[in-house]
Amino acid sequence: GAGVSQSPRYKVAKRGQDVALRCDPISGHVSLFWYQQALGQGPEFLTYFQNEAQLDKSGLPSDRFFAERPEGSVSTLKIQRTQQEDSAVYLCASSLLGLGSYEQYFGPGTRLTVT
Amino acid sequence: DQQVKQNSPSLSVQEGRISILNCDYTNSMFDYFLWYKKYPAEGPTFLISISSIKDKNEDGRFTVFLNKSAKHLSLHIVPSQPGDSAVYFCAASNNAGNMLTFGGGTRLMVKP
Image (cartoon, rainbow over all chains, first blue to last red; front, side, top):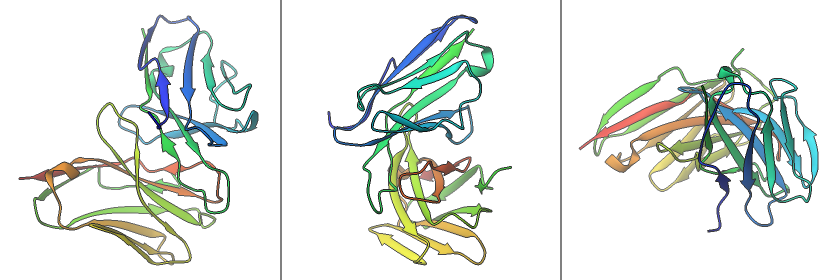
């Protein structure tokens, strides 16, 4: 498909485990964003890449959260030593870079449940 | 503090009638506003947007109105259809390519 894909779609982790969430953006999209969506709330910004450069990570809630995009395409969001408060849907979005490129296109998300 | 707010968590409308979803923002640096629609177990889908230099943008059944002085925008859906039933998120940005700041969403239910 031509859209943003994410894997896994669902992940259950025991408290203290490390998890890795993958995002495949739309081909040719330079910008990639990660958002966290808690139950009943809107998505909240975590971090932003332009190609392989991580330009903004101000939304990462703690140093247990780490994101990378080494070749400027696929991105991985890693959460170390998961806690119950990390339970949420993690959304990835991509967009073109250029004048007027405000629209972001979202993947289906990964629902993380920490038990 | 929430920079983008959707004060109505839910809205119920009869099929064929108008649906009006509202959104308020506090950050005067926002210059672009978007509406996303979300079905369960799917990611948000872009619906319609508006630049701060405009006060109205229309696309088929969907129209977004922006009142900059009131820091308020609204999404009108006419006529509403049962397939429009979803959660609608308002989002704002202060620069192309920047992060989006989302409201908490409004669940729209269109009854047949």
